[in-house]
Image (tube, rainbow over all chains, first blue to last red):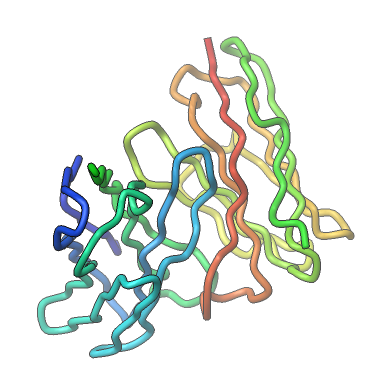
Length: 114
Length: 114
């Protein structure tokens, strides 16, 4: 079945450092890809999405490109801030297309130090 | 506008008991999904309801059931609780039945089974 693999954390960075969180996926169809973020004490929020190959999703300085050839959707940010500290989840939509089911990775905890 | 609201926020039960969790979607959203998030893992899909009909079910035992009411709110019921049911239960709403966009998540109900 479809699955998502993302790098394990925690990832600890200093403020203004470059961030990459790796995400690869396995899917039989052509899913949409998502990054969700969970800030401490809050619910999951959509950070960005891409619906087809070569699409780039971007939001709040974060970017991710849908790479079909490498089945990847790595999250990047050029300069992280303390406020970016959160758990980041890579997810894909169920490729059977019948529901809005999301398949999530295990999450990566990002801790940004001042 | 109010986001997705869930109740209760925390609860403690003992093995063998039954629990009911409640969710109110964003106004105008007709689809509600339930996810289970075990500590240290990504959310796992349990159910999706759209217009009061079940549209999808994840790989969970029959002890888990749900329903959606005419006002689109939803309940998740779990019978014969096991220790392994301890988790954060997330409700998400959307305006669509298939994954064309984002899911809006509540903050969750944290269930502890002793």
